[in-house]
Picture (cartoon, rainbow, N blue to C red):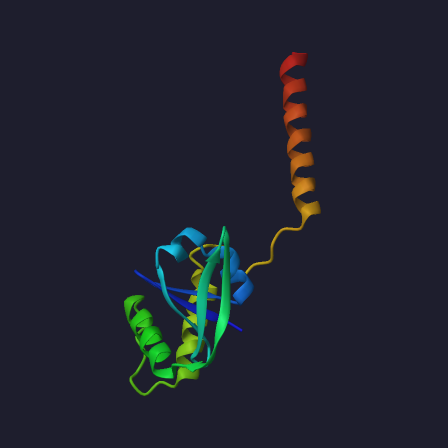
Amino acid sequence: MPIFVETDEALLMFPSIKMAERCLDAEDVRHGVYARAFGSSGEKFAIEADGRRVIITPIAHAVDVSGLRELLKRFLEAVGEPASDDASLKELVATAEAYWEERDPLGDRFSQPVPWWGCLWFVAALAGAVTFVWKLAHCS
């Protein structure tokens, strides 16, 4: 389920709560940078910091469809993709999701994390390349 997070300057969208918790900064949470958070049907979420961790939890029985509609319309207008006044919440959510998937400002929200063995392979390949270049330089 996507989650939309209002900041003091923009709107952030994450494909899941776990991704949002991983990407948001706990210090920013303590300073109130993230004003509101919504699910795709207007469900409201609380954003809290526990040490260096960010924790996002649903607020029981709290739904604000008009708040999410207003936030999405303002965001889409700001990025040059204005929506009509009669666009449904589902259409606004789909348009915002499409925008984020295409332009992903952080470059990794919609991608999969690199597994540990991928990182290990990269380090080994880099070490091999450095060794090869060093031997070439010293064999001449």
